[in-house]
Length: 294
Image (cartoon, rainbow, N blue to C red; front, side, top):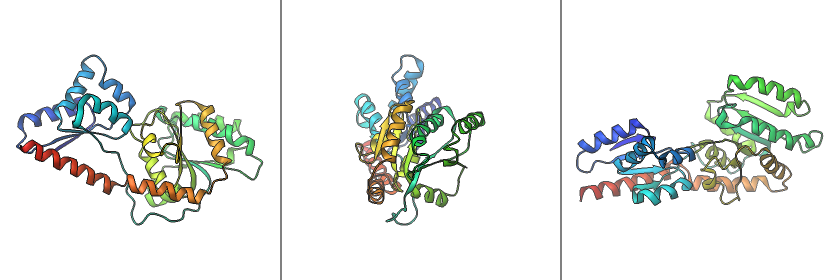
């Protein structure tokens, strides 16, 4: 079996060469890792779109990570397209208690254009400033490397919002998964304000630790994880008012955060652990292998 990643020229040549030389029972598997912009490029007129469509035709199996994109691709390419989401891996058993605190968490490459970190800071300011002197104070914890071009923005933002500056914490990158999971476990809310993501595995890491999710319609995986609004909110890209409104609603929620966290984690562990996902992929590959032999 040949496994290639992404709809690009490299994958096209690998799959073309393999198709010409592969033995009986050989399978060319393409993991598209596609976002919404990639879907638009796939169906575009011209050589780029043509090569991308031919790449899918050359594969025996092509997987897509989100149901939003799967529905579009399945209409065009049929049974060749399979839905195989990304997953998460955790050592040990699912936590039964989290110790949730008034923390909004985000994890990623902070300050880059796709991550829209500035929109999260603006939304938090709108939500937190009215509560700055109340007992219902929240922290915004941002984990990840900070893009150099974004540092001046942070400095100006904190000077402009001195009343909540001590509630905003930049941790820097955290490579220790156990340490990061402890932060996930404490957070009540996980926010991914991205303008575009092919998936957003941090959503799964957060959900597996019982975080309520807030993300945008630029993150198609959000619709597969948030359980029709039961475990999360989806707001339009770059809509600070909508994002702030979602945060205010949650910050003022009287919900049982521990019970909610257990329910969110149960769903994530049931549907998105790598063990189950790989088993489904193995079944699909096995069927394709047998089909190619007949």
